[in-house]
Length: 153
Length: 188
Image (tube, rainbow over all chains, first blue to last red):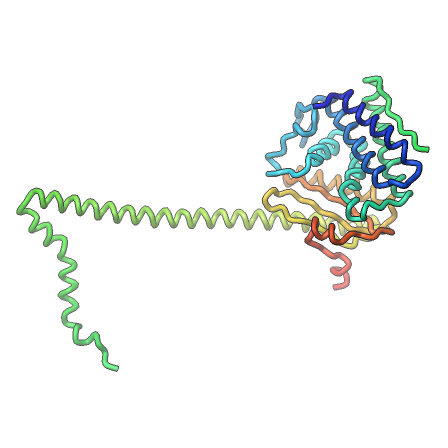
């Protein structure tokens, strides 16, 4: 299981990659995919840092979303994203809809043949993903003296 | 046609008597030998055991029938509850969006059914400006939270915007084969 630093390093690595090709708008589907997986690492870093999260109002001691036990609610979960989304929606409400929009695109991209217009890509990456980065810097970055930035010219 | 049973009518009571007196007759004769008496008691006991076993079997079968009936009843209720919840989610979204988000047009809601897991996944096909999708996602998050807290059901609700996009219907139908077409409902 990765720790806080490892998750953030992975997020930074993905952001560096995103910055290299984003301005061309030639791979908008990949821009959205890379943004989503960067956000996943940011969220996992925050879960690790928090140590305790709330689920349905109850406090749970976990350090990764996979540790959230949902067997009382659903017999089988085909995707681990479900656990993470539930944690985000209850614990990181400020960015929940932004993270959900990234997840939404990762799920629905195949139905539009991975084709994204420039304007739509900007909404997802420059707005939604960038807001998640700013939120991280404000809520977790200062304490851990780590700053994430997204430079898309 | 001649009724064939008439010639035998007088004999029927005798045959019946023979059958009714069969066991006492056997027991009376059995007194002649303790071994035969014991054997007859064993036979009687065995007969009783067989009768009891048949009764138990019947009761058990009835029990199974009752249990199966109850299981089927529960399954039917779970399926109905599950379907009702999906319908209520789609109805609520449609009514809310029609009333409060007039610039968002909902074309249809699609779903797949996961009766075994009780997991809900609904995809709304809409037509709107890209920036309005975020408002829908906020609404969906609120609905998912209510469904989890009030109904203990985990759900995912997605939006797919048709605006300037060619939809891959083959993939869509494979993942979400069940459709609720609101535009058709409205026309009807």
